[in-house]
Amino acid sequence: MGSYISDGYTRTGYIAAAVPEESGERLYDELEFTYRPATRMDVTRLDAEIVVAVRNKEFDPKCAERAEQIACKFVASRIDSWTLKDVGIHDVPVTAAACERIHPYLFTRLYGILRGTLASDVKPNEEAKPSDAEQVKN
Image 1: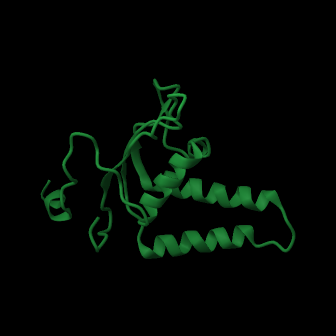
Image 2: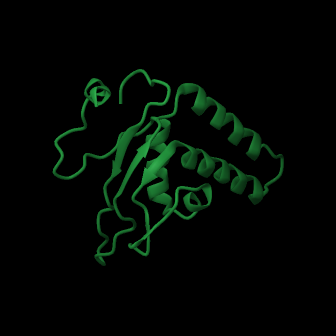
């Protein structure tokens, strides 16, 4: 990603499938997506919303659930499209409710990429992502 995020700018992202466990089962499949990277102000606003949602003097699981719902709404608002499938064959619409059902480890990776704290994986058979300047030419 570049150092400056233009208004309306979109990127393509990729998260490789999880490494198979000893049983051969994968925790989650690969995910390709198109998204609008978050700016500093987007992340600041999101973090403030989450802090307000969890501010409580006594333990209340509903506060934690509310914070996760805010994070899911944020993810859904940044994603333009994705290849997420239900049972491996049915397209899953990009919604906050769908984000609540994404595998926790996959969600953490996706959330980090959208916030700008993690980079996408390199897609197999792809050397490297085009530079921002090359993408602007398209």
